[in-house]
Image (cartoon, rainbow, N blue to C red; front, side):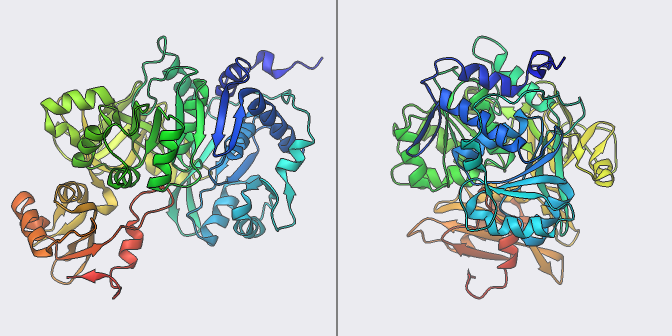
Length: 540
């Protein structure tokens, strides 16, 4: 006798979402512009997509590459991959052709689902793979590949059966996290990540929450996914919304004016921004006190945040700004809740520089170089983490897994320190530390950038170490200035020296209208390095 696996398998986060989608079926579930899916419509479309993926010959445990833009169907196809027991492999848009092809090959994806916008790049990557994955498009495209949406429309709107539960240490989601050319690093996570997320929102009547998993009002919240769905931040934001029964609104592409319009018109209550997105929003002329009365939680994460900008955000939006720290290898590490940040920050200004304390069931230690011993309070070292949100390892890469995971602890590559109360302060990425001066001392770019953002007329800032014959590296800063701002590089250098010391004085200052950002909205320091010698830049 064949037993339906849904009757015997443990309850998954997808089950949790479907429980909501079987109730109050006319309530909105997914929104993108004019496209508005009710819970019943979303459920039926999810089941059809699961059936359509099954017709590609996929078996439980197989990898499915998702090369997708921010749209409602992208959310549903990701859920469909997990619904049929397969492994999600997120393929973000930033890698070049060679890196993307290596990512597809190393992940072992049997099927690649591409957005029509990315079809040519996806076909190139799939064509280079020895595994020869099947390429399908999420909608019609110019290439000769099957339209998954058209196929799904012909499938029955019933849940696929006989799906086995994943093993305890089986990777179910794989995220790209950089690497070297032709050898990408793919952070693999098990279902434990999702179990923790569901547990966090089930803790208490409405879930106690944290900065990464903020408390929500089931069925009434409206959540905006503004970062890429194929990155950890966008993925967690969307899953968090859906497991709480909240409506999820998808922003196709971030632009401050468009984001403000959606936040206001869709009455968004919760969203997540990376710092440059928040800064762009604050700099928009329509972003004024009281402009977004429905908004009650903004999670800021993905990169270091400026204390002065966080304080500005609280003045504009109220005490709704929370801060979180994580990375692809550890999707939740530390958090600072909105109410705590606003209240405790008023008493202890230094806390605005902190990214909070370890989230539930997570441990943080700061360790010295090549040391397994935790450093004393206040001493800078590498941040190491242990907990349920830490990856299983790098997919099919035992050597680099052994380097990153030691004794169950993840070496994050971030430099920071803990205070006596367990608050974590990040000072730099290990690879971004600038070593300079006659005694080869460390300049922490985060410390310098935070100070630069307190200067009048500076909207964003980045600090880099550039080659220097005398000291090996010299400090160079890039400033995005406000329109009409008159900034004197010599005065900036003097202000830096007065506040941080001679070691931090920039050798050169570059003034720009805006800083380049990556596809996920972070400041693109690689692009700044490439542009360092460009005569087109206004240097002094």
